[in-house]
Amino acid sequence: MNIWNTTSDFILLGLFNYTEAHLFLFVMVLTIAFSSLVGNALMILLIHQDVHLHTPMYFLLSQLSLMDMMLISTIVPKMAADYLSGKKSISPAGCGLQIFFFLTLAGGECFLLAAMSYDRYVAVCHPLRYPILMSWQLCLRMTMGSWFLGAADGLMQAAATLSFPFCDAHEINHFFCEAPTLVRLACADTFVFEYVMYICCVLMLLVPFSLILISYSLILAVVLQMRSREACKKAFSTCSSHLSVVGLFYGAGIFTYMGPKSYRSANHDKIVSVFYTIFTPLLNPLIYSIRNSEVKGALRKCMGQCAALSHN
Image 1 (tube, rainbow, N blue to C red):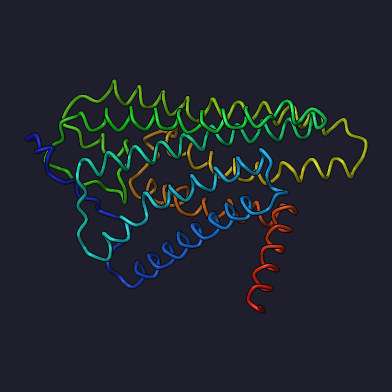
Image 2: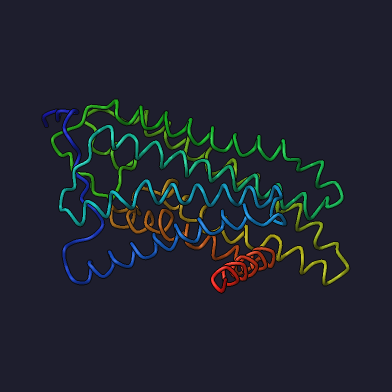
């Protein structure tokens, strides 16, 4: 097979065909993506406006919403433009940027969720020492560390992926550039890179996930010792929102990057990718708004202020 000119564009085959059923699904995906953007933007606005939410926990939540908004903005506009215009090409530079931003945000979210689990551990197990153990300085360091580790992984994988020569078959059977999908088109031996990439994905997923498990094991041990039913209920409600988000995010991530190749197909990969790049960002603000009394209170207050302004 001839080596393809790497200065030429890749072709993204996309998610949908031009049928009535797929057009309906396309509109649904756009609606979900727009709702995700609005929901996460509203979450950031509420946290910024309400002084009662100016705590490390809600600052970390605002960073999660920011990552989700950026993730949708990295993928959905290009996918929608390709479908509507019929032009499905993407330059190698554009592909590299998508890989970089996707892995930066997905990797950063892994570590951010671990930081949020530590915050919940301190809040439940050491409430009186919370201002010391979860200081603003530590909170900012964990946030910056999450962004940095995600960016380091994204830069390394994007640069390494695009360093390969690509063959004639330059069609990417996906709706965005993802490193594992692009590597399959390489016209070279990619075994070492795929092995290293697998190790990186395992570390990016399992190290934060292990920290989350440790935090919640310690929380569970403390909760089981509580004699007050009201205290137990409050502790579980404090952690349930975060646990729901962790389950959604890590379930999809582990299925995509750590599952056996023999059980995977391009269509399955695309469906799972839709779930954690478009659908999960919508669930995050919903989970935190429905299950969190402080966020609901801030939303009611904001709506009351808007209503008062409209009457004036």
